[in-house]
Figure 1 (cartoon, rainbow, N blue to C red):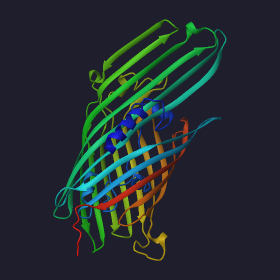
Figure 2: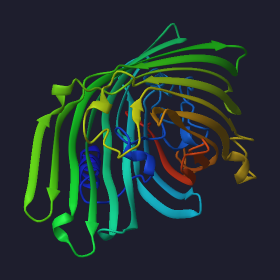
Figure 3: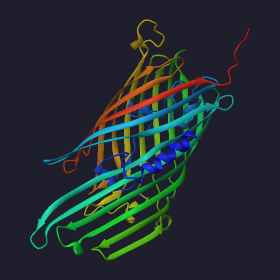
Figure 4: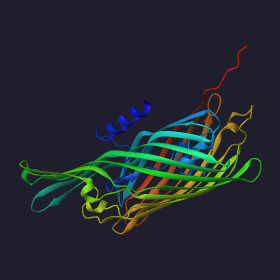
Length: 419
């Protein structure tokens, strides 16, 4: 029921003009891809492909959900906020966003098997750009461009462990969303010269993700884990509506299905390696590669109409590293020693190029989990400091992100002793 309510909220957020994310770079393709993982993943730089934990739900690798206490039920609910400063020469702009990030539940099925269900964002579209210039023939005219929406996914995953070391997982994703974009030119007095065009995109597709993890014990409490994931590229369904308006009388509208253009979303390959001590620390390094080169997004208005800028989809990559440390999980005197502290760093290369150059971003993260009540319940707080648009000619986006995650843990079907 809660998942259905969140899906309804996600659909509303894409059509009422609000922004779940805001960046001028979200004008390209399907928008800005959302940072991966829940709050505990993101506070470690976004790692998780090789992470195994019986305290947190790891949504980055479906094989990881078998790392759990028997009969345990786990859930994660996350919130996401961001403050962004955009600079281009002497021009500056500031924007803030706040949105629901994820809702995930995980529970065991049988011996050495488990399942996970959830909803998370995939991409965000949010921008509002305008400027006015003087023309000697027509007077002042104002150019404006705006967009909102994004893509979300509902997913279900199943995993099992073989020989107590090898875990295999599979995940099915249903992606859906609405993206709205509009561009206009208006004049001071002559309304017949006014022009506007826009695109409304309704998209959906079904894809799958496979995951594997192998855990090698080094001592009774230390483990080396390697993991890998692969998400398939599948065709993008839905429809697009393109309209054009000139003055008050000339209006044109064209609608067609996206399948006519053989559109798709890119595939993704990820690998990772981690080293952990059960109750003390975790260190992990991940690499992911996404291939959008053959998705054909640059052939369809709404995905590619970005004025005079040359947009082209390509190969995206990211490198992420993170570490977590718990001083003494069972300390009875000092509460702060029972908290878990995290930090990480990442480098992302965009899945598209703008005038032949990728839009890269780099950042560092900090975070901690505060234990609440009994068991493994906790509140995770994460901070993200980063910059996007590293090339000299690109708009610089300096951002400060805030993630808040609520980790819920309980034991199901436990028989209580009675006297």
